[in-house]
Image (cartoon, rainbow, N blue to C red; front, top):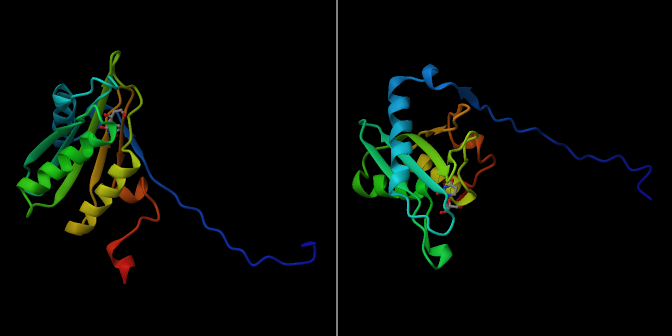
Length: 167
Ligand code: THU
């Protein structure tokens, strides 16, 4: 039926750049933030999943705020490490933009070789925090095989919903 109809459909490709570093290739302050995220896994409360996630954010003035996943017997009431850290930072230092977010996760076997990436809800919150302060948040994802780095949430959440979309 459609044989002789010329379709006008267009398409475009979305690309994300993810840089992968060895620990020794990282700047000292990135190493320190990743170490804070690794240490933060100790504060995780994960009796249901056994998956301990730590997050650490560095603010514009250098302050570091940590968070970890906090589970609850009513599952949706728990919270991921990323949002725990971001909300704590915003609550305590509302005037400081978030510069970098580091994430590390371990299970019973230890830290993951391939990094965990933020869930969809956390990506939305990271997007919101970027828009709140008007600057991208670098994201460092810890893996024992390499540290994956993106320059902002756009790489993990393309075509994101934005404040200005409201008109
Ligand atoms: N979790 C995080 O805290 N961050 C992530 O990026 C992925 C998942 C938590 C939620 C839950 O407590 C456990 O990991 C298993 O999904």
